[in-house]
Figure 1 (cartoon, rainbow, N blue to C red):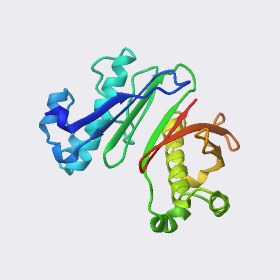
Figure 2: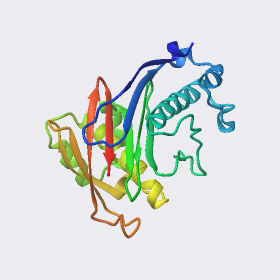
Figure 3: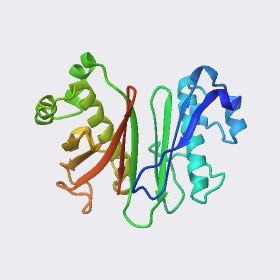
Figure 4: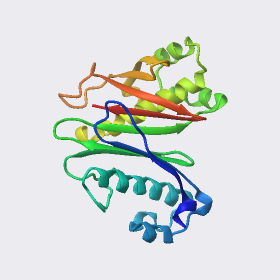
Length: 231
């Protein structure tokens, strides 16, 4: 029954990443609550009355997290969530989980200093929707910069949205505070090399100060855009 819910699970080889990244597709139509016990993961109380889609994406992400953590020496680890709904990774591990409508990803690596991991997958925003949403994602200056590029505006906006989500996931375990999409700006995108750069505009901590720049990479599969930040 698991094989009809979890589809195409695989480890992704990413150069320069000192951990593991796993990806799968999942079928909401084939989800049922018994899958939690089949995988050996408890159905958390906060999902007891959730719709099937929410339970399915949560389970797919936790399934990948268990797989990735086992590869890092943490077998059968129960990845709980904190007060702010963040995943509580084992000591010495930095990680992140993401999902869209039918794809889940998990990235994790050993971490002993101030390193972080952020991963995010987004379904490409339709053009009309991008025109409605861009003010909450990018500044007017960023918007103009995106519009001057040869790629479609909605693809680039999806990429920036995902990149800023990855930055938040990578930094939150250190800064322990929320920051907005407009607290960082896109400063570079290389479509051929599949890399990007973000700059913090707000000081979050002495180490994560305004002006600090973070590099990341991205890839596209169909209408899904995935970004990864690793430092």
